[in-house]
Image (tube, protein in one colour):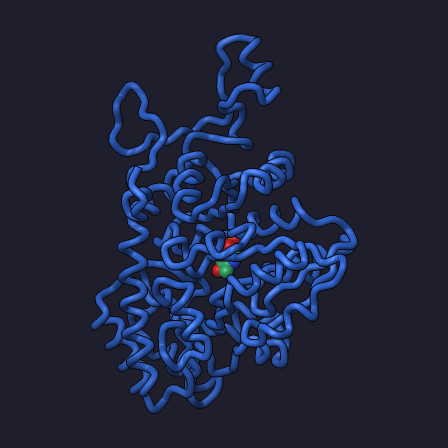
Length: 388
Ligand SMILES: *Cc1c(COP(=O)(O)O)cnc(C)c1O
């Protein structure tokens, strides 16, 4: 098999049936039939490999997992119904009461809720560290710290931290290093190759990339994923075969989609950087980005998300958003359609103003998920909205 991303994403496939279908078939089956009682025994005793029940494995989820492992340089993986199920399953598999997590402060809203309301109830504590202050991370590691968790680039602040640096800290203190790689996708950033133990994706975002299905995946070494599987098999967060089929098909076009998302987003970022009505533009591949050098080192391109601060606070942000004719106003991201979100009153409305400012969200912040429409139309929509 080729080592090239595009070829792996397209040519990794499950065995074909006697119909010789070109595209993978969909295996909508909850269970599997055994040749005889002995085969049933052997499969349950793990003496033989094969499908037993779709909560454990299914040909469509296996194909999706195999592709993702090859694309990200992981030995094994487990696919889940949503990105949050992947994060919950990872925490659930490795944490026990009394453990501690050091996490980036800027994490997906539901991850913040898991840490503050769910795991705290079970005696797991955490501390937040900032992506732009790498010197703070080691100080927060305690004897009971079990996981370092990070999202880079962050949502919606678009801050970046050096993954090799955090991997070094994790190794030194013998803790697990877990990365939420959702914003970058395996095409732009491969955390495991940079020293991460576990890489997690919300496949709902760029991996589907067309706003259709939810999904998630956990990738890592055989040994770590076997612990994840033990927890997952009995807690039941498995990805549906149909969604796995969609996601595996979507991977076939991930590289071309990401190239265009990134190309369009960079043009938008460059255009907005010099606009008199814009106070700030955050995009990893703009030389003005504070961690530009780190982004260049660990990411292939800058991604599809541009976060801006419109002058005039919340009124300015709202006027801009309401002036957009083509962009959708939605809380989702990573779609073929360009989307504008006002984080302070939607995805991050549960935070206090002070907490929001700590993660770089101002009242005037607008997160732009740059889609795959023609870039001239994207730029014109933005320009008209700013002039409105
Ligand atoms: C969307 C998202 C998640 C959660 O994924 P779901 O599939 O919606 O559960 C987790 N992390 C990041 C960075 C996300 O953007």
